[in-house]
Amino acid sequence: MATTEEAPEEVEVESESPLTTARRQLEAAAAHLDIDTNVVERLKHPRKVERVAVPIERDTGDIEVFTGYRAQHDCVRGPYKGGLRYNPHVTEEECIGLAMWMTWKCAVMDIPFGGAKGGVVVDERTLSHGEKERLTRRFAQELRDVVGPTKDIPAPDMGTDPETMGWFMDAYSMQEGETVPGVVTGKPPVIGGSYGREEAPGRSVAIITREACEYYDMDMEDTTVAVQGFGSVGANAARLLDDWGADVVAVSDVNGAIYDPDGLDTRDVMGHDERPGMVAGYDAPETRTNDELLELDVDVLIPAAIGNVLTADNANDVKADLVVEGANGPTTTGADAIFERRGVQVVPDILANAGGVTVSYFEWLQDINRRAWSLERVNDELEEEMLDAWHDVRSTFDTDEDLSWRDAAYVVGLQRVVDAHNARGLWP
Image (cartoon, rainbow, N blue to C red; front, top):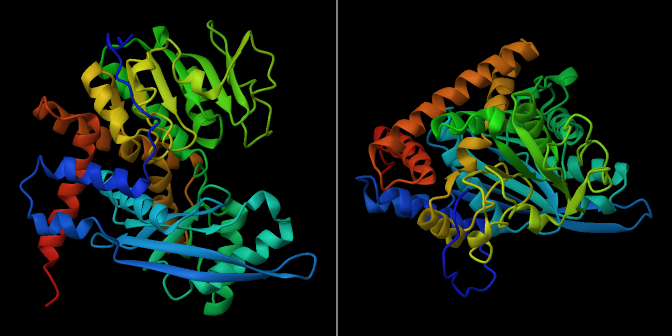
């Protein structure tokens, strides 16, 4: 296991916005490339941010107005792509930062999309089913001029799901006067969605974890794994790694973590998306808090819940040798610096969880061609794409001992974006 520093620093709890983190990561990657500083400065900012009012009639008959955003970062390689989230903590700055990550993620995977992100400032748990549908349809109408299958293609995120995408697609199509399935991805397969889309981010996390373990000569049969966040991403990653022989010893949901040093039966534990509260209530030998899970003595740690969970405040206490990011932005800049000093390897989110946007690309292709793929084909194509991306990042990582895995992924993605900008030139 990774060793801790002999004299941990006195630090305060660290919290930084996705935009702050994304800009720092961009600067770190740019330092390893011969890039015009003007281009880097341009990429620190979005091309456009839409802010809209979203009024709906509540079940009580009252009118309530919510605020919605759509940040569009860069489209030099293709249409904007990114999720829509319903969360009370959605902000313009958060959307911009997450949109930047999507730009790099699409470029690392070498798929022809740029980055976007959006959402509505609302606690979706306070909405009835009908209210959520009305909110979605009105939001689709407010964004109608800036989205579309060749402009900007939303997808599910926190607080949204395939049903939400179906409503969005239907509202957009009704206004267009024709069925336009390619306006969103992550839809139910019966209306143009792709098989395997929901499982894809977790599957890609598992694939990259397997490859990273092999790179560091870690036998999967002897590898212990802790997963923070047993939702769609974490549960699918944990179950695949379990199937491949790893010992998944701890998982958690919002209510807490369960721990079995001999390994959990991940197929028996139901994820938070499947049955909320099931994880913390599962009959396991031991329980832990979510914070304690991060500090367990395991080989691999997969933070797959929310951002900013690995900070300068707890990075010295992480005992894992390898961190594979399942969530977006779980590691702050301060934590990254500590992990680098300690020799803890961190495989970044823009590579590890890119299965979601990759299968979204597959869905978009299926919608354009009006021809569905089988689940087997989706999974086979995803495996191939993830291995290609892993090879590109690994090759870059191996060329310079000063590069971290995050730097290497950003170098790959940033170089592709810059090359595209140079090839297209600047409109006078």
